[in-house]
Structures are given as structure tokens and as C-alpha cells.
Length: 116
Image 1 (cartoon, rainbow, N blue to C red):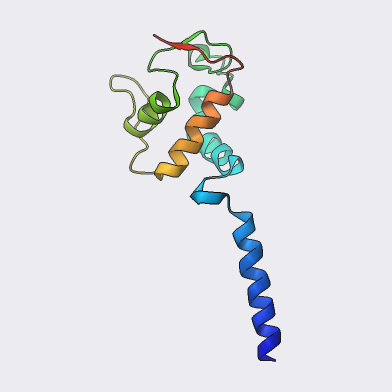
Image 2 (cartoon, rainbow, N blue to C red):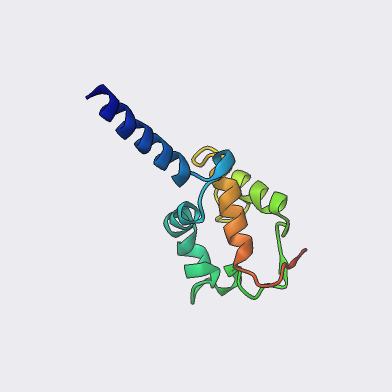
């Protein structure tokens, strides 16, 4: 009985370990969940903007107001953009979640725009 329990436990822990990305990275599916819950109302589904807020789209941009590099986008998500509706998420999301979200947001643009 102990041996069976040990095998089951080993299988459970090894399969759950494989389900997690290496190095504590956040899976794209989680980044999409975060985007949908927090970013989509302003930036639109898949970063395409909304009818009222087309200028907030990530798709088709040629330049990004707050910077286009991974570090720039991480900083904007973490600290928000003072004087705009972009709130800081540094206290609500982990660093890994913010990094994954920044990567996702940048992936919406087929060509990486320049910073303004």
C-alpha cells in the first residue's frame, strides 16, 4: 500500500512540475487571462483597440508612447502611466505575470514599433 501511494504521489508531483514552465515563467494562457480581465476593456480583444479607444490598440502601431521594448512595457504595466487611465499593476501582479503580460502585449504587433 505504501509503495502504491508513493508511486501515485511521485506521478502527481512530476506531472504537475511538467505543467509549469521552467524558471517560474508564466504560461501564455495565464497572460491571456490577465489581459482579458485587466487590459481588454481599453486595449480591446487581442490588442486591436475598441471603437471608442482605437488609439489604444497595440496592433498596427508604428510607435508606442511609453516605449516599445520589453523593459519599457514592463515598466508601464508595473508603474502605470501618470496622467492617463493606465493604472499601475505592480502591486496586483507578480513580476513574472507582468513580464509575461508585456511579452504578450508586444506580440500583438507584427512589427515592433519604435518608442516615441
